[in-house]
Length: 255
Image (cartoon, rainbow, N blue to C red):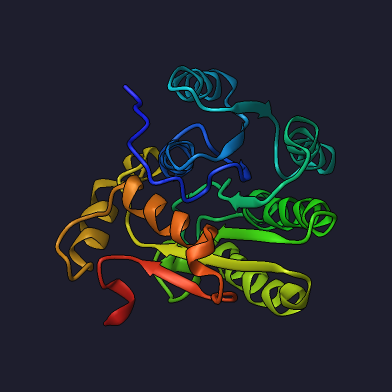
């Protein structure tokens, strides 16, 4: 059962949008943000899981709205940001987390597979950032945290469609950080290694064993560990950090 852990008020009164919030890193991040006093809009395509999360946060006294929608669709992405502005008068933080993680090599992947992943992981991140920034600039700025991956920083086998999409995530982060720095918007990313999420459990046993063994720390990560890094980058504690891709990967990229 979801619980909201104790916090220190690091996002007190800040309005935050978390996309892809119904499970995994998104869910852990929403719970962490709620504990830190954020006023939340949570988004996902999974209405049932999203409502479960909303009830958990609201039951713990958090301010939360849920918006079911597909980040790859322009009107859905715009509506998520509009919900935050309507409910809270502003948007201070975006966590662009929504994405899918298919395991495919070049031989088995099709152009349709590539387009589908790019639509959600790439186009969806672009649209989420675009509309979030429009809102942030009206109130003096904000903080964006994108979800990249070790697959967006280094090559891996069987990531012919997912890996390139995460290079897009890292690229969006760096370019927007430079473009928006003078306007008060910070843009950073986390690059998780292998994390114990529903997405990982759908991978083959061979794949899971291989990537787990590749992490020097000797285990896979937990969603809450990534959420803690996202919290830091989103908060004012990271006020002089923009354009960073923070590995949360058990040492994978250090090799």
